[in-house]
Image (tube, rainbow, N blue to C red; front, side, top):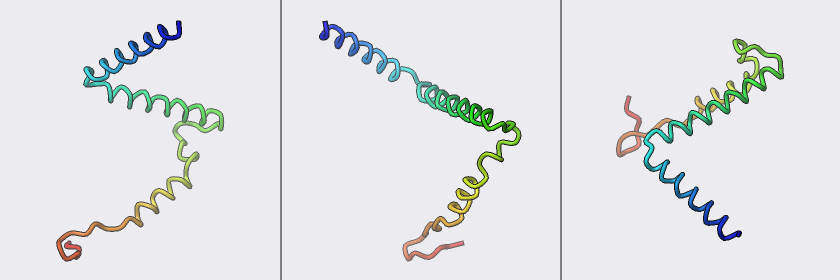
Length: 87
């Protein structure tokens, strides 16, 4: 009985892999599902905190500032064979 169950699960997995391989829009669907789940989670968090969607910036000011500072501190790319930056 366990062997039959394993065979059935394997067959289902094979069929799903074939669908993924044959569907050119599969990655877009997966990304969209993840995006919708993340948006739903964020909406629930904002509703719990009592923040309106228009004032979502109240939820993440420090994180946004940290990311902005990180972007400023990135090293500049080096161009040329001698390591000089040409502008």
